[in-house]
Image 1: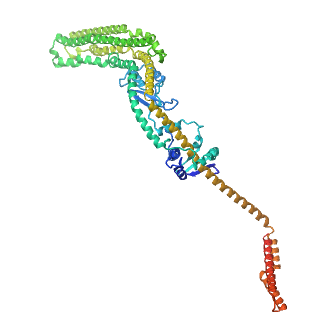
Image 2 (image 1 turned 90 degrees about the horizontal axis):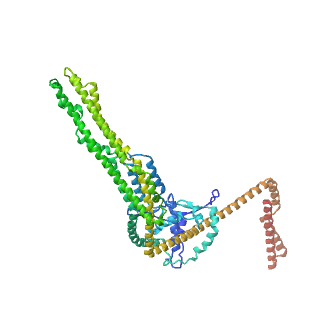
Image 3 (image 1 turned 135 degrees about the horizontal axis):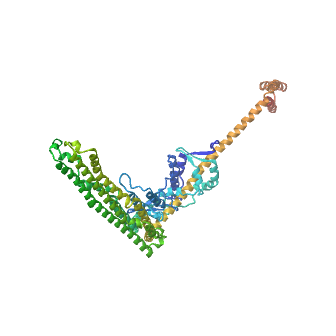
Length: 640
């Protein structure tokens, strides 16, 4: 334990060793349910984190079931938290806002109407937010379901704070002291079960992670066949639900393509194709092909007038053909197109009114947009009647053609006037400044005539903005109706699926409960095992801390006593030396005892008894002992 950081650390190798030799659940060594789930948690929470993963749990993604061209979202947990694009009212508002931009289309020729209906088709293929499939439509996987459990686990779940406090790398595992103290009582209760198991898990009844993965795969295969059959029924039902909208969009696309050639941006290409078929050359090329400048002096005025007139006769014929064969025909086609559009709108209104009256999807209501469609389209009744607009365009073109022919007549008169007044006959006199101006005006007049007709077609008959607004009204009403039908049909198929394949669904529930129980046991046992190692390490470090503290205290006391006794050291040393001199040494005492013994023997003679000898020896020993004791006391006094 680092006192500065208040963290307890243990080696990963020790943790791995303890996990791998964790006790079995019964006397049978095959029953290692707790060990395998503890190993599972260890690999997921500790080893996976030590390898440098940014997050143990990958970002959860909602699954999608593809039903033909449609998609249905699968609910992955208790609450819907979609991370995939789904249908929302914001999409419809976005589509409607595009109409307000009043753009005819982009540079690629894609009209605003086509962008709009294409967006609606994409919207139809998005998963609905109103109807989710149950989790049984997604395969069950131990690994992914564990990630889901981790992501949705609550902060007050057992041992959640313990695992959140764990940190470390490949070599060490750490926990803060506060969390360890918090879980210490619980860990202390678990430690006895690490030696004497009380769980009694049998392998035949409780599945280890590897066994559960196999069981999940088996049940997934059984459900896959059932889901395939249900998908086929759903596709048919959903296609029927969205049929009216999809059919409407397809017809709108056809009408929009034709509209582009009639009153849209591509009407110019059709017009130019018609003019190209008339094979008209410019006046300069025509004149040079008919009149040689060197021979003009030999030509009569009537011949020159005839050649000049032939060209403008051809131009007049071409303009009249443009009015009769193109303008009138084109406007008739515009009438037919508008009739087709009106028929489509009448069909949509009629179908919606019929279904509202029959209450076909009444349980999916209310149908506000459907009921308001009739009144909303009334605002466009005058706009949808283009008879007056077409008549106006036609009269405008007739006036323009008449004006153009009048300009050609003035040009011919001006040329003839110059022709008969020019003497001598010269080319530069034939084409005066006024005549050249009229020729230029006549040549540009036909082009201007066509440009004006294009403007009238695109701006005066039926605008792109109006067309798209009507599409939005009809499409949103059909969407409202289709979503209600989709909700009912999908709900019916889900109910039928649940009844038909109840056995597989019940088995799936059992497997989910087994996974949750295994994860709970794994969390508990690994937390107890790792916690016991942390507590043992804590006690070891605390024991070392006590020894170090006692040693430091002893050293401090010794330092204090040494400084106190240093002042009287010299006087005590002299006193000790004097006392030591007054004490007899061991050798001197022994010599004195020997002399005494000799004198005694000399006095008593050579007939000393045994008792006398023993008494003499005892006296000698006592003398020696007294000398030794006196010397030891002298040394102790010196040390004091």
